[in-house]
Structure formats: C-alpha cells, structure tokens
Length: 230
Image (cartoon, rainbow, N blue to C red; front, side, top):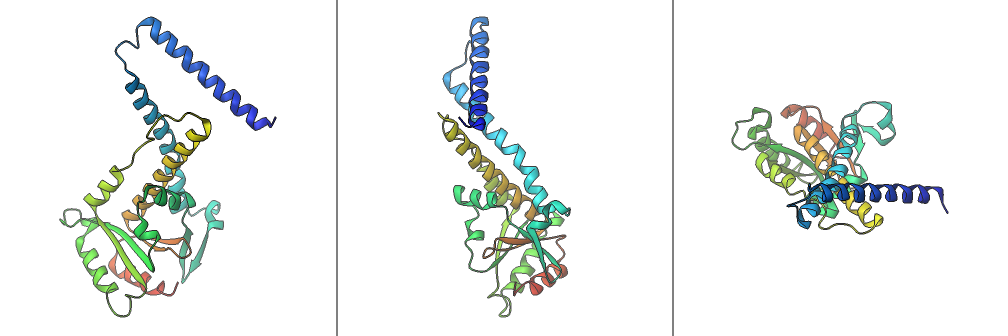
C-alpha cells in the first residue's frame, strides 16, 4: 500500500481516537451536559472553515504584494508595469461561489476598486470614482475597459456572505472538498481586499493583473492608457 495513504490513515485514526477519548471524558465528568447535537455540528463547521480560511490569506497577500524572487516566475512586465498571475484558487473561488464573475467573465479589461460615496473616507474618494468612470466612457477608452467599482458598504456585504460547510463531511474526500472550497473563497476574498486598497487592472483573457501602488488619479489614468493594448 502507498506510504502516503498509510500515513493519512494513521493520522485519521489517531484523530478519531482522540475525539472519542475527549468525548468520553466529557460525558463521564458531566462537562457535555446541556450540549445538543446541533452544537457539535456548528462547532465542527466553524473549525473546518476557520482552519482552511486562515492559512491561505498570507499566501494570497504574498502573490499580490511580494517583490521577491519567489514570485518572479509568476510575473512579467508590460510598459514597465508588473503583470502578476491571478492564483487559480482565486478564480476557482469565484466560480464555486458565483461571486465576482462580472470581473472574470468580462469581455474587456477591468479596473476594480472600492470607494466611499459619502466622502467620509478620503482614501476612498468618490471623486476618484466619478473621474475614472468619465475617462473610461470616452470614445478612445470605452472599447478597452470596464469599471467594476463597489461602495465600501456593498463590498463589506459581499465579504459577509462567506459561509462554511453546509453539513458534516462523512469521508476524507468530502472533508477535503469542503476545505478546498472554503480555502478558495478565502483566497478570492483576500485578493479583492488587497485590490480594493488602491485599484487593480485585471485582464480576464490571460488571467493577469496589475495592482497600482496608490489611488492617484493622474497615475491611474496613465496606467490605463499605457495598458489599453495589453
């Protein structure tokens, strides 16, 4: 039998034994008194979801923000702008959750950002949004770009829609699928969170993107102009 399979079976067996022992101790000591089966289901779902949620965020931030050699193979350049590859897990998360498909299914390049219509948050100025929309609606730029912009509150509500597994998995394969789905969603949410801090120009045809360093209107317009044929 394959060594990896044997090791996985040993790990699964050890985990089950630990759970049984802990439940036995809890039962005989009266610690579990008052708990229902629904409590255990809810706890299980949170554990599975949170374990898969926390680890990927660092990985996605690294893919977006790192300038080290570890990501150099996944990036290239165009007109002196660094082109980064969108992690496949981000794209998988979009299709699995039916979220952000207006970005990945767009028929032209997308500029994505978050703004504050109230104007209370200066870093998310609505003026930036209005000027970008006006600029990209010009005859020269309209064929090349689509604006996907969300108000800060709308963006927050989309992230709040994240959910964990719908039921307890009854096999290692099913547990891994649930964990992957939660991980994909978490990576996708982190990707758009990082883009929302400034803005990202996303090319859905080649699954690459450029993350801009600031939300400066002049610099953004320059980037949009330089990258329109990309």
